[in-house]
Length: 250
Image (cartoon, rainbow, N blue to C red; front, side, top):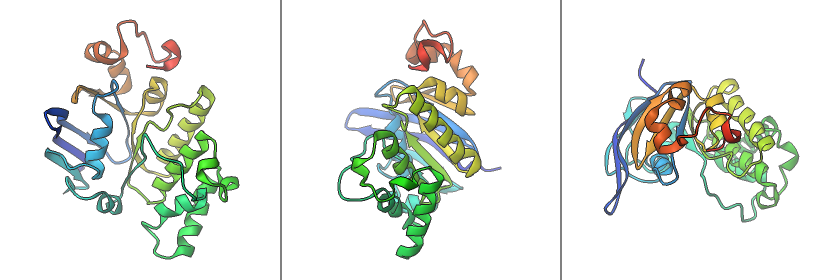
C-alpha cells in the first residue's frame, strides 16, 4: 500500500545553514508519528516544507502519490494536509466560533454551513461554552484546542501538530493527550506531532522520528527510540532511564 506521506531526501537551506539535510521517512495512513529532537534541530522547518510554508531547497514531499513540494500552503490544505503552529498570535476580534469557521471555509462555501460545522467541532472538543468568547480572552489550554479545532475543520487526512502541549501543566497535558488520541482514533485522522514531553510521545505514538542538526538520526517504535544510543547522546542525555524519568520532560 502506498504511504500517505513520503518525504524523500528533503533539504532546506537558509543561506549557508542546512536546517534540514536529506531527510527521508514515510507515514502510513492511520499512523500517529512523533517528531522529536533538540531545539533548533529543524523540526518546525520540516513541517513548514511539508505544508507549503517553505519550498524545499531540494527533495520531494509526496502526499497520496502526488509530489506537493513547493505548492503554496492553501493548495496543500485543500489536498487534505493541515497543521497547527508552535507560535500563534491570539489577538484580533475573532471569537472561538469564528476562528474555527476560518478552517471550515476550506470545505464549506456557505457561511451557514461553515458555522454549523465549526459549532459541531467546538462541541466535540468540549469548547461549546466558549463559542462567543474572543480567542484572546480564553485560557491558554482552550486557545490551543481552538486552534487545533480550526485545523481539524479543514477535514484533513493528515494533521501536523507543532508542540500543542507546550506550556501546559501536567493535568492540562494529560487532557491534551486525550484530545489528540480522540482526533487520531475516533476521527480517523493521521497525525504527526512535534513534542518535547516524552511521556506523551511514548504513550501516543506508533512511530518516532528523531532530528538532530537537521538530519534524521533515528526512526522506529517508541521503545526502540528510547534505547537508541545516538538518540540518548543527542537528545535524551546519558542519565535517561525511561519515559517517566524526570516527570517525562526532556
